[in-house]
Length: 256
Image 1: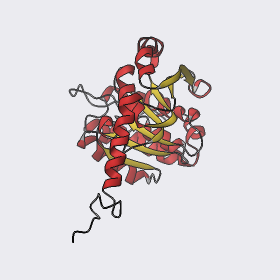
Image 2 (image 1 turned 45 degrees about the vertical axis):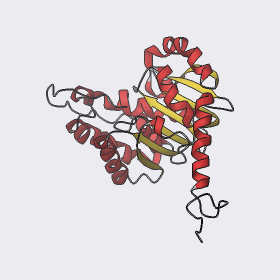
Image 3 (image 1 turned 120 degrees about the horizontal axis):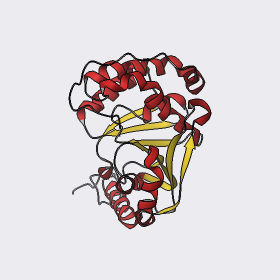
Image 4 (image 1 turned 90 degrees about the horizontal axis):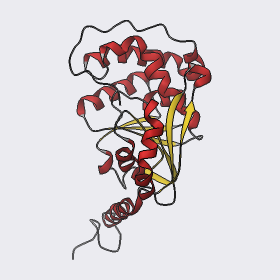
C-alpha cells in the first residue's frame, strides 16, 4: 500500500530523472512505467495516496523497489496484491511481468477509482481492479501469489492473505528492515495458517544497489488453515447450489 499523507505538508518535490535500471526492469513497458511514476507524482499526491515528500524518491523507494519483486515469480503466475493502495507493488510487478495476471485488491473507493484510471491509461491487459477486503474474498479469489506492502504486521497480513492462495502457493510481503523480527514473531501464527516454509529473501541488489527485503511464506496443502478451508468449502457449496440443473437445489429448479 502506498504511504498516505494525513495533511498537506507543502507541495510535492520534483520527480527525479528516470534511473537507467528502469529500462532493464520494464523492457517494452518502460514508457508505461515512466507514465505511472508521473501519475503517482501528480494525481497520486493530489488524492492523498502518496506523500508529497516521497515524490523525489518515487523511482528508487517505490516503483523499482516493488518491481524487483518480479524476480521471485514463476512464469504465467496469478497474483493478488492485497491492500494495493496506489498500486504498489502490484502495478510495477504487472509492468515488469506481462505474463503474470495481477488482481489489485483494495477496499476504499477513492483508491480503486485511481487504480482503474491508471490501468486504463497504461492499457494493462494483465491487471484487474477489485474492490473489497481480503477476508471477504476467501473462496472467491484463488491465486498462486499474494503480495502486500506496508499493509499490516506480518501475522495479521498472513491471516488475510494466506487464505487467498491455492495449495502450495506463496505470500510475498515487502517488509524492509523489520523483516527478520516480524518473521520471528509470527512463526506460530504462520504454522496455524498452513505455512510450511518461510524466509527473508533479498531481491534487486544488482539493480538498485540496496536489496528489497521480502518475507516469502510458502503454503502447504491447506493455505489459511482450517477456518479458511471451511470458508472455501462453504462458498463452493453455495456456488453449486446456485447453478441451474444442480439436482434441483438452486435457482435453476423448475416449479410445477
